[in-house]
Length: 396
Image 1: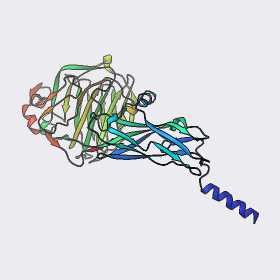
Image 2 (image 1 turned 45 degrees about the horizontal axis):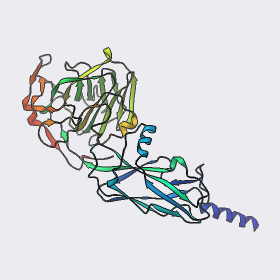
Image 3 (image 1 turned 90 degrees about the horizontal axis):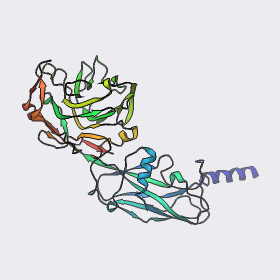
Image 4 (image 1 turned 135 degrees about the vertical axis):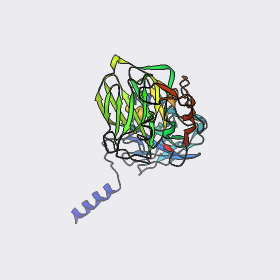
């Protein structure tokens, strides 16, 4: 009987959660145990997120915790984690019920509420976070766990965007008046395949010097490679491990840091190799939309949508790439040219950086036959097709 009573007591105590085994002891903001950055999905404003504070043990007496929004913490987090988050504009957010209580005999507090009241002051392409931190504690016999003192609510807005729907009659080249010299680089583009077929090459883009040399050339299904992407560049040629699918958005990032050439798909490293660039520099000056040679425009056509074309003069980190799935800030460090392709009409594409690399597709050019030199293709502008529907949504 005594053994049964003891066993019952131990079972009851454990099931009540007196002692949480995280190999830690103290107070922490709920949800930060594994990662302090937590997604806050926002489709409309006002939108709310509940915040609580927990203890790793049931407290013996009431514990009062004061929470605060401290935007100064964002710069410190960026420096420590190689991220590029922006602090929430203070006129966009309200912290309601900032003083919470963990009652005696409990391990979780009452609820504070973060309310996002507006996104009007948001700058397009920036990822905002709301840092909610423990600013004061009273009545506790335990310390605050430093790594879980602050939760960074990453505002994930649902964005409905324009993109260009590829048309082989629009396939041509735009040659800029000036070049962008690149010794290290990152090229990025978002695509939405609609016509993948595991048969023959499907070429859809090139970024190159004015004479087509040192090109980043992208094509699917070279030698029937099961919807994988062949990435030819001055630093080497690679094939992705990813097998791409129709009707899915992908951010493609091509990174060269001076010795290694890497390909990322949706912010995740797909493949890499050692590489070098002849003469150590690429003078980017020419963008090819689709496959523009007359004999190949239809035969190698790749049905897809595209947007978010970017040229950087530095190698982005994995965390920076992952932070730009929906867009980036036009004033980001090292961003040399940025075409959102979000105009929604017409045939002129603005360089969002303000560096002057705008494109007017009525001034595009292509080779009518291989080796024949560039000829004007003003009519290509008439075939630019815009699309914006429920498939063109991004939440970051």
